[in-house]
Each structure stands twice: as structure tokens, then as C-alpha cells.
Length: 252
Image 1 (tube, rainbow, N blue to C red):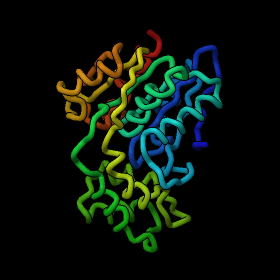
Image 2: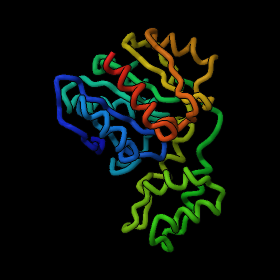
Image 3: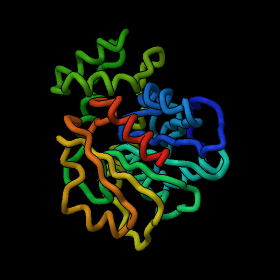
């Protein structure tokens, strides 16, 4: 099963499961998870091939949805679910295939579509870090900077660095091999009628107006909200506003 980080204790309210995006980990969500845990238990997961979770050859959305279903079933069998980017696609897939496990769904800055850009250059950059010369995270950040990786992403990527082990806590080979599946979304004839919030950053173009008809076909109860001044990493750009929007929706 996926590695989980538990925040707070179980209550009468279903727990909130958080599924991170590509190259992330449950640890990235610590601040928001701890704040939301004042009302319910929050379970941040490491997705497969990330963090401390097992590595696998398959990295597609049916498999990731099954991973999340296993976590929810182990924590009472019903949960709210928040997914960002890749984790948002996995969360949508879970709703469409295991909808009975969910009460409410928050999809953060992603649509159920295939994207044409690639995340492979970041894998190349991480592979370009000479881990034998890394003694502290700043060493790796300097090597990433030399390859053109922006400052915010340098810090983000190095959170997945195992310094004592001189290794990445990311299955870079597996993620590279599965990149077409990660950038796509399965063609599925299903829908989930439960309360769904598509929460986006106002300066992100991941969820566009032309995506809304498909979103409404799959999620007829979908609502849409934007966080002003936030990009794709909306939870990092505007953490307080993000937390407030999620909290209001979950408690509605």
C-alpha cells in the first residue's frame, strides 16, 4: 500500500486524502494538511514511484486510482479526496471507477484531458545531478540551476532527495517510461455525480474554458473557482487562500 502521513485523529467526519502531483510527495503538503486536520483526519500519501511508496513498472491512472482506493478502504471506506495535477487526474479516475468511496472531490488545477507538453526535461535535469558530489541540498540546487531549472522547482525537486542514500526518492526511469500515460487521461464512459470542485490558479492555463463541457459530462455537479494570483502550484503560491477554499467546500 502507499506510504501515508497521518495528520490529526479520526472524527465523525470522513478523512481527507491528499494526492500530490508529479515529482512531489505527501511531505510537500504538510502545512496545509496540518491546518485542515483541525476538523478531520488528513491523510497525505506518497503516490507510487514517489517518496517512500513502492516503485512499480505501471504508472497510469487506473493503477493510481486503485492505490488511492486501497488507502481509503484501510481508513474507514469513505473519504473526501483532494488531488493536485497528476494526483488530481488520479483522484478523478478514482471517482469515476470507485465513486462509492468518495463523499466530496477537489481537483486542483488539472483537467481530464491529454496535455501536449512534456515533463521529461525535468527528469533529464535530475539525472544530470552528480549525486556523488552532493553533500547538502544546496549542492543539488546549484546543479539543477546550471541546467536551467528555476529556483522554485529546484527547491521542490530536492525535497525528494535522499541525501544519506545519495539517491532520488523518485523512480525516474519508470516515470520517464510512463510519461505518455501521465500526460494523458483515459477515455472512459462514466460519470460521478458527487460534489466536485475544480480549483484553479488564475494565471494557470491547465484548465481552460474549452475543457468545461468534458468536465461537466464526467462530473455533472462540478463547480469552478479560481484563486487570484496563483499559478499551477496554487497551494504553494497562495496557501492560505487555497486552504480556505478547500475548507469551505468540504464543509458546505
